[in-house]
Image (cartoon, rainbow, N blue to C red; front, side, top):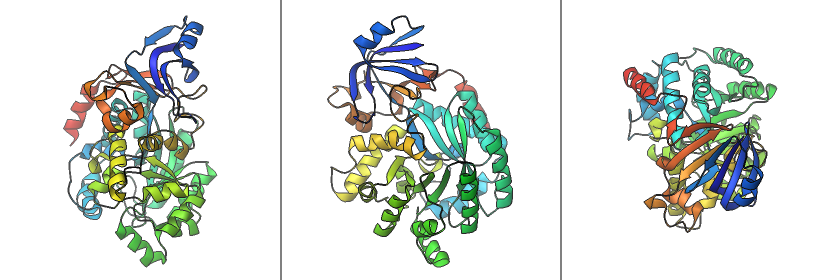
Length: 428
């Protein structure tokens, strides 16, 4: 049992309570108690381990709902071009040379970066997901592993039939794993037929799994859908029964009012990736209209080679600023709204809102400490504002995942970071 005392707690519970002189207790992988310091410390003063959180702020672990972890190997490899040119002419050709080794080390590098910037749960979208799972289990991180399904040949398989067979094996292998889960991830309209989407959704439903996909990321994708299906992207997905509460759509930059209403009615969630969308000049997601329609919006970084980092704290700030200037309205995308996207909304998107996304009794102990005794975080007029507009990944001090201390004093416990860096430098 671990007692954490003298700490400010941003709970993200339904009342969005902040406990300024708080304490919480971790037993096994669960938050056993949380509340005012005087009450909790008195009751649990004989805990096996006591941590003094003076000067620290605790918040729920951040949830990155869209990324391509192994692409961390391609940081800065191809910049300043649109998505089609970037992916087809530069990223895909070099990515096609990847194998198990590259995916493992690239994913482990991404996990180090995510943990050190406060992310405790990720949604990946890639190949060789067994290697991603191996890295996650070694470092102690949690994630949902989206097995990419394409009709075009990849470095992992030659046909979509082969992709489904490989995915089926992974579903069986990681059933009931405490850290990782499998998801189906049909890629996007230009690479994946509607028939393959339908087959992927059937496999997801048969196994009670999530389905991830890129949707309406670019105008070119919408034009492709209109040409081939005589409908816009969301219309085509709904017509073919792809969307429901267990579907996460990444990007959604090019939606009209009709699609937004249809999307809200479907109960599917969206992973908003503003930095990637801006860097590739793909478009700006209609955030305010989607929120007003009741769409659940979570936050993602996308892959490193279109971001170029995995810092969810930075992603929150840029999210808020982008939508304010886009509408010329400073009231849009408030700090609290954006923090919700990175925490409780992300948990809802993954179907895990009863387990993670807020710090409450009975939930999993995925907890991040930020060191607030820094010049750019003082004075503490508004903690939520500071988190979104002032903090950055280097402020993260300590990370618990599933009740285990994964990082303390910015040192990750289970992994030799220098070894990972050295391996990556030799790969590419």
